[in-house]
Length: 440
Image 1 (cartoon, rainbow, N blue to C red):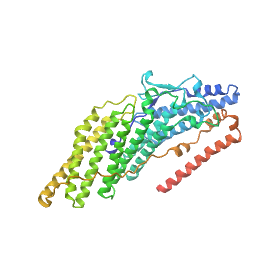
Image 2 (cartoon, rainbow, N blue to C red):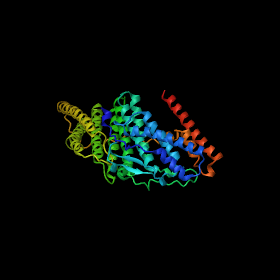
Image 3 (cartoon, rainbow, N blue to C red):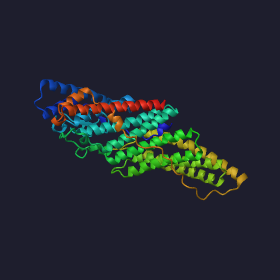
Image 4 (tube, helix red, strand yellow):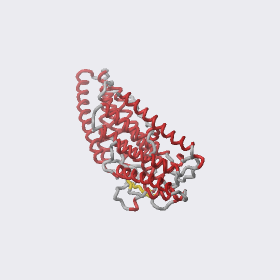
C-alpha cells in the first residue's frame, strides 16, 4: 500500500515539432555559405535529433507516467544532445517552428500550449520530466516489497529531488561554447501556463516532496528491521517533519497548490500519530505507564483530526489545471484513508487494553506532557550532474555542431573538447561498475 501513499505529480506534455528544420534553418542563418557536404552533415545531425525528440514525445505523453529506466535514458540522451547543439546554435532568430509544451493533455486546445523558439523552454521541460519519471520509477519499485527494491525506490526519489533542484537553476547560456553569442535564458523565456510548474518556488516544493516520499520509504524499511521502537518513532517523526516542510514550501508559492498542501498535511499527521504510537510501544517495553497512556491518547487525537478534518479537506480541494497538482488524488486519498482506519482501530484496542491494565495493576495517572518525538532524517537530494555528463553526445550531433564552433575552438581545441566528453563517459562507466560491484 505504501506506493499509493506517495505524493506524485504529472509530467508536462508536448506535441510534434519539426526540430530538423529548426536546426537546419538556424544553422543556415549562422553559416549561410556552407558547402553541400557540410549541409548534409547538419541535416544528418538534425534528423537524428528529430528522431530522438519523437521518443521524448512518447515518454512525456504516456499515461500512466513512464516508470522505466529506458524512458529516463531516452530523455537524458535527448537533453544532452539538444543542449550541445543549443550551446552553439542560435534558435531564437529562426521562424520555422517552435518548441511546444503544455500542462494539459496531448489533445489540449491550441491556446493551452506554450510555444517558444528558445531551447531553454525545451530543456527545462525535459529536465522536469526526467524528475517526474525518476519519481515514478521509485514508486514502481515499491511493488516488490523486497528490501533491495525499496532501497532502490528511495534512491530514485532522491535522484528525482536532485533533478528538480538542478532544473531550478538551469540556464542553457551557461553551456555556451567558447564565446558563441547564443541567446536564450530562463529570464527571457515566457513560460505562460507553465510558469507555476517551472518557477523556483514550485521546483523547491517538488524537491522537498520527493525527499519526503523517500523518507516515507525509509520508515517502511525501519518497521521491518530490528530497530528499537523509539528509533522507528524517530524515523516516523522524520517523515512528519519532511511533509511539514512541503507544506511550508507550498505556502511560499505565488499560487499555492492546495491539493498537494492538503496531501502533505495529511501525511504529516499520519506519521505524527505513527511516531506517538511507536513511543507508546517503547514506553510499554520500559514499564513507563504514564507516558504510554499519554502517547496513545496523543496518537488517537491526531488520527481523529486527520480523519475528520484533513481527509475531507483533501477530497474537496480542486486540482490546479496549469500549476502543480497531485497525481491521482482519489487513489491517494483512498490509500491514506485505509491506513488511518487501520491505525485508528489498532490504537483504540491498545488504548483500552492499556487503561484496563493500569486500572487493575498500576493505578497510574497519565503523564501531563511527553516530549515531542525528535526526527531522524535519512534523505538528501542526489546531484544528477554526473549522470547527465555520463551521457555522451551522439556522433552525428557532434559533427553537425562542429560546423558552428568559432574559429578559436576549431582544430586542437575542438578535439580536446570532444576528448573531455569521452573521458567523462569513461569515468561515469567506471563509477557505475564500481557501484555495481559494491552492491553485490
